[in-house]
Image (cartoon, rainbow, N blue to C red; front, side, top):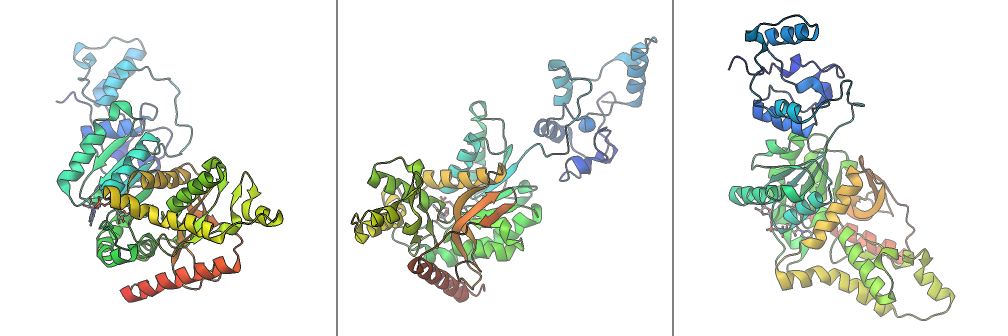
Length: 422
Ligand SMILES: NC(=O)c1ccc[n+]([C@@H]2O[C@H](COP(=O)([O-])OP(=O)(O)OC[C@H]3O[C@@H](n4cnc5c(N)ncnc54)[C@H](O)[C@@H]3O)[C@@H](O)[C@H]2O)c1
């Protein structure tokens, strides 16, 4: 044992690039066990960064120095410690480049937490994994067996996936240092149940989740998916104490995608060429922005009007109703929705972690936009990046669209008042 590599306190690290380990990896405070060290080395690619390399006993370091100088060494001091740790074994497999230094103090990885490993949480988790959006994925749920089962099931797919550390625990300590926390925990919407009916059941649940997340990841971005998403995003914002740009809800990102594909079907074009937004509440009072729909840059309604091509308002309403009812239909048919929301939420995560600055209709603090005066979260076309919500697109609305949006806001604010969370 005495010949084993010795891990002293991390305060005694000897990285030549960083003044202290805290500068390298602020979340690590404790002396790691060999296993933890192995994981840390894997996670932070420490073959390039020396500060977690095992300190050898002093005698061995002296020997290494004397070997280099060509002076004779004693048999006792030349015996190599057993290669028990990943760093040691890695030394056998790989030759390090001598002057390798981390190029900067940039973080080497991203950590994403998903709370709730039900249908939605797992669809999001697996989409995040397959799209290579994170280097560490933490899962949390109250059902310990299901949680462990889901974690193992994903870990067993390691050979087919990009290298990602997957951890899970009922204890929120496992989420420490998360860049994004996606909340999907919640009572599931029942067949025929309105999203607003769910709110009371989920309010209590959020009180046990959000403070734990911000305790372990005070700088995180919260992405709320649980329904009713707008009210729960407001509740998450209130409970977290985070600035509003770091709290958002998946909102009408998915509704807008359904909207685009229905319009594309109707016009026989590719959905990717259709720019169309549904804003407002993710639910029955959402607002379809007909005035700003464009296909390949051509504004659809104004073109029809200019060319005096008649269109029926009912057709437009039918498309919007189909969007609203599509989630209900999937729930009626298979009991829940999962894949589409998985892709939708992953697209938001991608825009944030890759700082893509893409515009998504997501639930943001809407006060001050389009005449909304109350603290409510509603979907507006927002630009997303590593800072969370970077801004809200100044999209022109017709008088009717503004009126509908404000009615949505008032309805939501009314529920928040009833809940006593205003
Ligand atoms: N925003 C959207 O577009 C959208 C789309 C689909 C579903 N949803 C919502 O997502 C939520 C989840 O749906 P689902 O189908 O995955 O439900 P589900 O019942 O399959 O999963 C919910 C999970 O949450 C867990 N959970 C419950 N209380 C918890 C707590 N206190 N802490 C941690 N975990 C807890 C449960 O154990 C369960 O695993 C629902 O609120 C649903 O309405 C939103």
